[in-house]
Amino acid sequence: MRPTRRRLLGMLAAAPFAPAVAAPEYPSVQRQVLRFPADHGAHPEHRIEWWYLTGWLETAGLAPFGFQLTFFQIRPGIAEGNPSRFAAHHIVVAHAAVAWPGAGHLLHAARTARSMAGLVGASVGDCDVRLDRWRLWRQADSFKADVDAGDFALQLAFGPSGAPLLHGDGGFSQKAPGAQHASQYVSLPQLPVRGQVRAAGRALEVEGRAWFDHEWSSSLMHPEAAGWDWTGINLHDGSALMLFRMRRRDGSALWHGGTLRRADGAIQHYGPTDIAWQTLRDWRSPRSDVRWPVSQRVRFAGRALTLTPLMDDQELDTRSTTGAIYWEGAVRAHEGGQEVGRGYLELTGYDKALRL
Image (cartoon, rainbow, N blue to C red; front, side, top):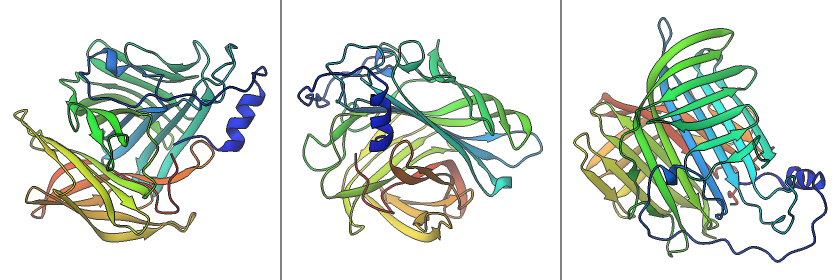
């Protein structure tokens, strides 16, 4: 994802003039041994990177609700030769949301700014990402988030984190045919979370279960791809499931991938022939008029999970920061008529082909 052209040009207009330089060569991700905690930190040589937290929270006297927090670092490649500390060597974008059923729709906010030492940026060597007063960082064996979005605020601690879950081939996650269409992809599922949430005029002590994703890449989307469906589910038996599909413009699957880590630590990876998605119900947004497949059935390894949204209206309009509208929602997972887990479902490219 990337900021809109108008917003990006506005950022650059504030920086001192830099002479035209050749477009940078972004390094492709490679099969390699990932090392932690260093690889929880930033990889600024790549085109795009994100740190992403979702989860379900509970508090006394209220129904469970969901939250999302995402930081992106983008290397736009248009101020590479400018030595000024004000030049947009990187752009940082942040999205935060609370799926508050009482409101009937998401409470959400977004921020974007060019990197600036001490104020905006992502640290190398360990996780510490900030955009002014929004921050996500790792401390000891836990992650911490502090976000004040005005209408709502999150102060949460996640962990201890346990061993990273590496998707694909040791973290090398294929997204389409061809080795160039890949990312480095790491998750920390089944994260205990506790802290404070302020929403709808209430200050709440909360606890729950979260999912952390960290992904970086230099590849553009495959030219046949329009968008993706992704889900990360913390299953009640202690296992964790991630499934995704890249979709063509006609809705057919270009690529599938996934990982199941069982409660005993055994890991099963799934490829393009192992997974199938089926839409069970659409919801049409009254704002964007986009039809989102908010309820889906996913089949893998002889199993079938039904994903049901906490509420239908979990659409995020982030055209001011990423140029995209997407649906990112808290979902319950059912199997055989029983709830077996909770997590999040992400849907992109249903209004128009997503451009990365």
